[in-house]
Length: 167
Image 1: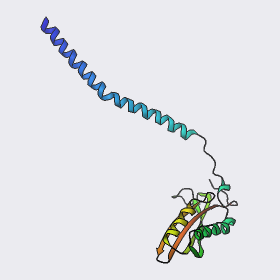
Image 2: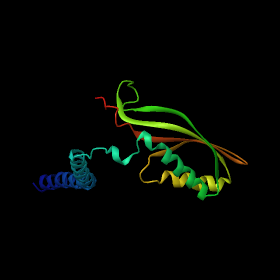
Image 3: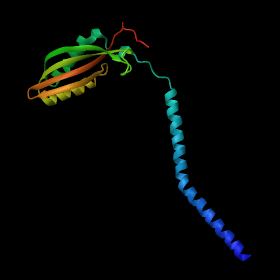
Image 4: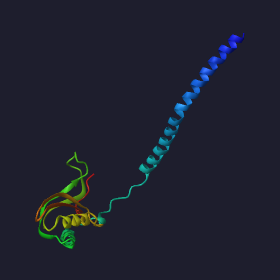
């Protein structure tokens, strides 16, 4: 009878040890799953928050381009860079979905070609100032530098108030 109880205790010890090791392995995983659930609820709440409507008043209109170009020239001149020429390359409508050609967003952009003369450091400073103008959306599309200065193509976004936004 003593052998049966001893044998029973061995099985109980093995099963208990296996359960203990399983708990030690899966307890950190359970904590990670709980953290992920909390994060999932947070992001679901973020998605359900009402989104602000894009305000066209923050971006310039097409008629504001002379003022915008003058401001760009002023920022370059502050960095001791001369703007030798400014040419409008094209004006295009921004697409809502890049794969679809019929969904316009009401947002358009113009590409301007700037011919600059000055130091590379001054040109770089001018670009940094351009990107930080609060009431403009200006992207630097292309820059080609040479020893005398360089050329740059700037993409300036604007709203066309008379153009309807298509669904």
